[in-house]
Image 1 (tube, helix red, strand yellow):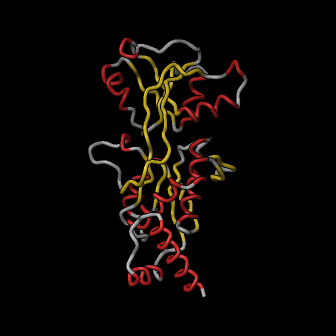
Image 2 (tube, one colour):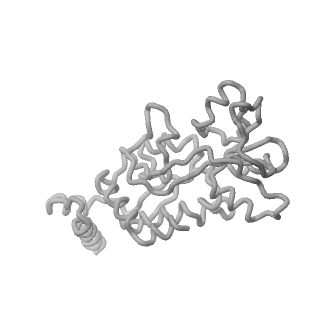
Image 3 (cartoon, one colour):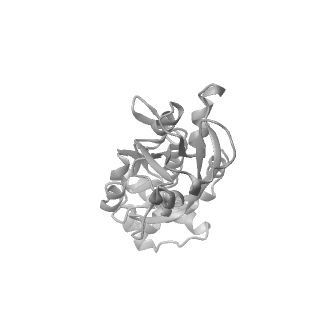
Length: 258
């Protein structure tokens, strides 16, 4: 009965893909894959993601924008989402080695010439990095700074600011997560910080007005993607089709609007 149900589900997915104008697998391939597809999709969840992307309770991810996205993808597969919690420095190796099937979210700008560790699907969320200080004011002339201590996240790339770091106009002050980085700024241990706009809004909403941090300027804007492991047990083309369907669904549009 379980195998019959999985076959019906897989054929239903293939028909839905055809109706959406996506390639339809041949009957022989459909029948063979329906017997071998996993029942789960393994998603990497980095320990550096904070609200509103990942909300944790007792250390476990329970909600947030990223988890909403993960569950949309799993439902479209359909499969049961398995969250694989990893340090941010381990994510790329886990994708490359097939320890996870997917990771949301990845931007090509976070990588050097070698590029991401897997195949990227369609664009999902757009992220904005902003420069933040304790006091409001006009945009800063970053090239004119002299050793401005800028809060950053350990292991993160900041290409738009790298020239300033290279010449000493800016100085990196790494923290283990965006939340720790903003706390260091609030407590006066740094002079500025580079932060995702949604993370800053969530951080400020939980604090009295006198403790809120202020945007001085935008420093980067980047689309992000789901990255599919080259060693996933799921067929690459099938997962890419699933992602294409997800971005066109009303729930995804509501998520983006939020």
